[in-house]
Image 1 (cartoon, helix red, strand yellow):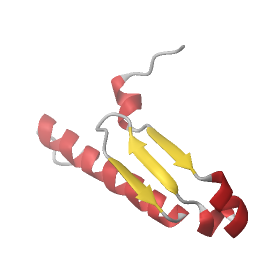
Image 2: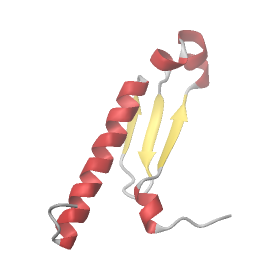
Image 3: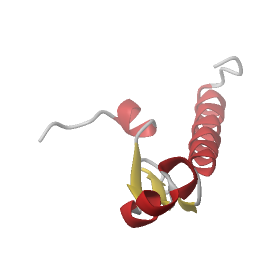
Length: 76
């Protein structure tokens, strides 16, 4: 099994989609499940692809802000 670097883990998510719900209501609206950010362990349930994308964007934005703060580079 290949190892992933810390930088890759910072952008990695585990997404679990309930196939039964997605199959009965249509994937876009019926994509309910759970998402977890690998590096931070922060997790959330989602009820649509929009909610999934919003969670991922928020976590990545927070990560980018934290990395900039830790390096002292406000433009990162």
